[in-house]
Image 1 (spheres, rainbow, N blue to C red):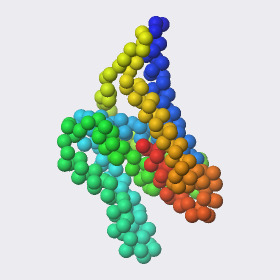
Image 2 (cartoon, rainbow, N blue to C red; image 1 turned 180 degrees about the vertical axis):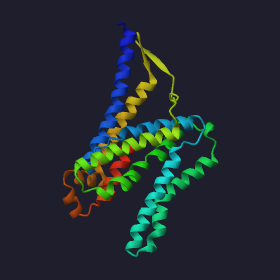
Image 3 (cartoon, rainbow, N blue to C red; image 1 turned 60 degrees about the vertical axis):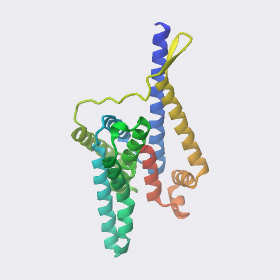
Image 4 (cartoon, helix red, strand yellow; image 1 turned 90 degrees about the vertical axis):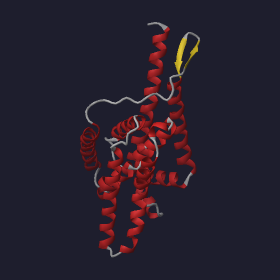
Length: 255
């Protein structure tokens, strides 16, 4: 093995390790707050990559339809609960809360030329499409059985993963897609060639880990999640809503 091969394998290992570290953080976060073993965490990663590939190709991703259908389903669920409690005056608030993001995304993506957007904007659009799927899935799948055993929640996670794989195959097809790198730049460090793309992945991973540290240590929402993870019943007694905690955990995991 020469130095160039060693450098390539080291970069590949560090880049892959950084991605898996973020996935591990998401799994631990969701389990600590909701007791859900999120088997479908990899589906969020796949949907993000496929959505980004469609944006880079100048097309609307099918995940936008999935987001819209999910938001409508949550609206129907909440309106049904309001109807049973005779609180129909809150329906406009529910509609605005759940349908604003899909509506804004549809209007924005219909008005702009994706081929002229930079990769940074496409990343933000990808996050805007995929990240809300986490809270939507929590509200539809896990919240109704939040007090069930870990085994029941695990079975639900496996079923959800299988369903999302099937939905992904139906939306995107079985053929593969490839995203373009953010940069093809590289530089020499001695006799080793270092890829700027690998450094970018490492820096973003470190920045996200640092942001999560600050979020959990210095914000009220972060402290509420820590309280829920430490003692969910105690957190409820002091006013931390479990729905908010679960939705926030799923939102962070889907970023």
